Image 1 (tube, rainbow, N blue to C red):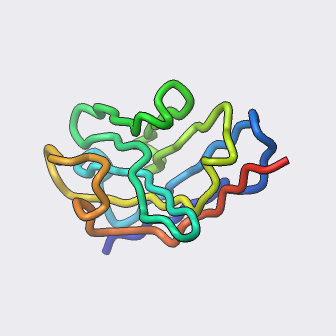
Image 2 (cartoon, rainbow, N blue to C red):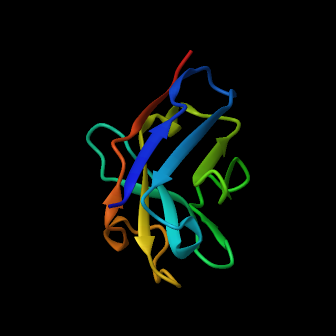
Length: 126
C-alpha cells in the first residue's frame, strides 16, 4: 500500500524559502513518478513539479521554473521540493502524489496520479 506523507510547510515572507518533503512508504521510489501539486482556496489543483521514475527527468510549471527544484533520495524514499523566491501566489495546500509508471504522459496533470498524501500548508505573506 502506497503511503505519502508531506512535511515542511509553514508561513514565510515573500522572497523567502521553504523545503517540502514527501516521505514515501510501500513503494520502490525509482519505479514511480512523483509529482507536487498545490491548491489555493477557490482554485483548482495544479501541478507544480514532477520527477519521473527511471531516469529522474524533471518537469515544472511555468510559474515556478527557476524558483522551485524537485529532487529525490531513493535511499530515504523521499522527494523534496525546494522553493525559493516565494511569492504570495505560491500560497496553497501542497500535495505530493505517486504513479507507478515508466513514462507519465502528462507529468503535471493531477488525474495521472493514483496515490496522494494529505498535504502541507504553505502560506507566503508579510
